Image (cartoon, rainbow, N blue to C red; front, side, top):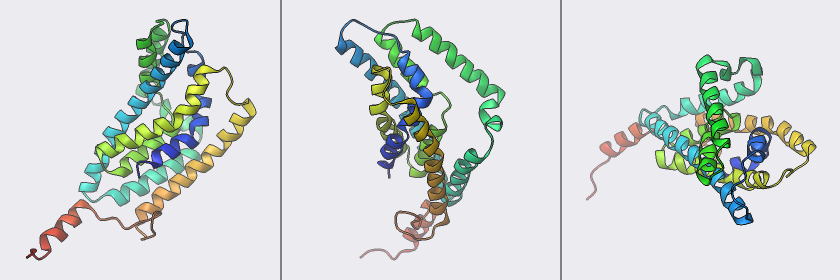
Length: 236
């Protein structure tokens, strides 16, 4: 299950270049050697991945509580529906427009500006950490997967692998001014909604508990499993 995070991150990495590429390209230069340049860019990406893992831990823990109360089917359907609704609802009605989120994003941008003025390895790592907190529709898809794991550590692993999936293209983008042509990026970004729609459908099917292997397997809640164990005859 958690390895799906890597596949999602890898397939969505060109979307990341489109959204976060300008940040990666504008990163300050630290040192004069190629090794220092590579290390600084790796630190930036490590910061992003750690933030994703943090999100995965928190939302995996939420998923664990959901499973405890036997609500994982409902939540899976809701998550899938939200992913699809996010594709349908016009951009102007996005929750990013909510005032307190706008203020939080504004503070993030202020901190970005401050860190960009400090040419150090530490500042690049912090820029990566902050980058992970920026609103991103594709990260939300990853978070939905972390919830579905139903475990804090697995959720953290899922999102860490999600971040690793984005690493090759984001690392290349932070080193070179142009990784792919603008046309190629636009074509891939057009495919992202289709991919997100498929993921949303898979979440809904998973919640429907149809008994289809890998697509909609039978779910057994923790509560039901406990009842089964309690009612089972004692082993001799």
